[in-house]
Amino acid sequence: MISKEEVKHVAKLARLGLSEKEIEKMQKELSVILDYINLLRELDISDIKPTSHSILLENISREDIIKEEDSQTVLKLLEAPPSKEKGHIKVKGILG
Image: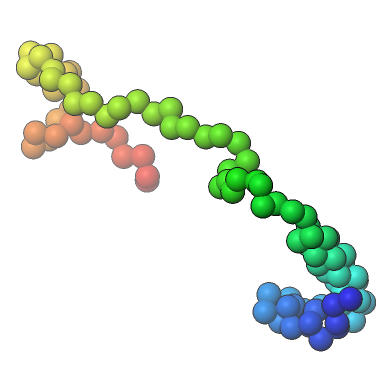
């Protein structure tokens, strides 16, 4: 079983102020956790391939491809905004 001093040390590292009753409770709970970890260490996992994720993940993003736009379309789009200033599109402020 983990000692009270070890619980106090961990609590100090975590900047937790524990009462004597809480220290005793944590002593029991941490001991159960550490016993379970030791139980897991006994398992033979030599044939198990290491993984970084429990599920398979794949990137579903599309390729970032630059498209050549029709210059007339670009000009129409730049003329569409109701307000422009110094060659930039002017919009309402949203942050106050």
